[in-house]
Image (cartoon, rainbow, N blue to C red):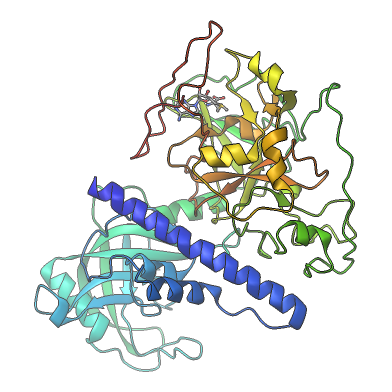
Amino acid sequence: SEEGKASEMVRHTLKRFEDLRRKLLRDAESRSDNSGIVVKRPDFKAASILKASALYLNQEKRVGHVPGIEVGDQFYFRIELCIVGLHRPLQAGIDAIHAKDSEYGIPVAASIVASGGYEDDLDTGETLIYTGQGGNNYKGDRRQQKHQRLEKGNLALANSCRKGLPVRLIRGCNDTGSSPTGKIYSYDGLYKVARFWLDMGLSGYGVYKFQLHRLPGQPPLGSALVQFMGKLKTTPSGREAMILKDISNGAEKLPLCVVNTVDRSPEAPADFRYIASIVYPSTILRPSAPKGCQCKDGCFDPFVCRCIRKNSGELPYTHDGALVELKNVVYECGEQCQCPPSCHTRVSQHGQKHRLEIFKTDRKGWGVRSWDSIPSGSFLCEYMGELISSEDAENLVGDDEYLFDLDCIKGNEARGVKLSLFNEDAGRTCEEASLAINARKLGNVGRFINHSCSPNLFVQCVLYDHHDLRIPHIMLFAMENIRPLKELTYDYAYVVGTVIDADGKVKSKACHCGAKRCRGRLY
Ligand code: SAM
């Protein structure tokens, strides 16, 4: 469908923006480690590269819905709103369409960003009193210092009111959690301008007020969800329909609750034991620790740090812990290294940071989602279980629902990812891989993550406590910005027709991921 294609374009473009931004940030950070140069706005730089290649979307000025954008979509950088055409000005709160570009012959408003930046704003979610623009001391405390006039954005909003035209609303909320900017912009859908009037502002100057009402029949408010989930305490008591407080029994730093809003069953998954590290059977020797680096002051120089050299000479993560790009294998420093535990290469080994929950899905059994917003590139969790040989894995016909094949390169190829950059010795995994992880009886949160043909997580193989390429840690990272309570999924990458039952017959299983481009079968 047209909307499906538009939505893919939006995701694809935002992913390009994020990929570029993180690379620019990483490069700037590694330069600043060496020379003290300050990192300057990689988001602006990434956006200007996209603009120069004419990759901005939806730049024609429009009232109403923007193709490919859903109510609830979240952004961390204001410039992302410009890139996807949701709100074009970078600073102004009102995106006005000039008379010459407007099909109504007069200026009208396309969208507004409500960031709570005005002293007079009043906001209940479904209705909002929005203060017009102008008259503020933008360079200082942003307070009113002149009367506002009915011109520019204010005039556009007034005209939208007179014509009964909808206006897109984006709310900017402060986020003290994972947002790289400290802000989250949520697209809250279409509002109508019910009325406007000139009022006396708190500073004693005239300000225009616009009363906005949310149009009915739209999905729930994304911004309200961010605020609501943010306020829930770390302890999950109070979570609706919770049937178990912590399925990890304290094995995770954060409790992992189980909720069921689908049926009345109080049964939580109980036919497995929760583990906090990979379990080695007696038949597979635990590989020895690798040679560590000597970087007592932290790792930044590829000529000094052997671990950075193993990552093609570049830090695999930005300083805020986002994976810069997918590699065949990422090497993190480890206990054998001289660098401190806070070293920028050590990310996934520190475990999950987001408040996750296990929830019952309609058609796929249990699944996993997060209370927190998850920025693109963030580490989510490891896929843990019992290590088994692939011969043993083959004998598990009929009980293989929790198996993970440990061949990184084959796995990435099956997911359609061809990696041009090879790590120093990652090529060897191809011939030698003969192991798998079975999370059927022993596992962690990773075993509950379902498959999607249009996933929001990806798999990155990581080594840190040993360098045995047959046994990489299977780490899941966010592929895009993920809003709270959105189901977390990755691509299982089964090759259809290769899963066999006990009689040697090809098995097939219908996929219920619900993606617009679902392949129809899991295997
Ligand atoms: N849903 C599982 C549970 O309740 O424990 C957790 C995931 S488990 C690793 C894999 C199994 O989940 C699959 O074999 C299948 O039964 C189910 N599953 C995962 N993704 C699915 C999808 N997109 N469609 C249908 N079933 C799915």
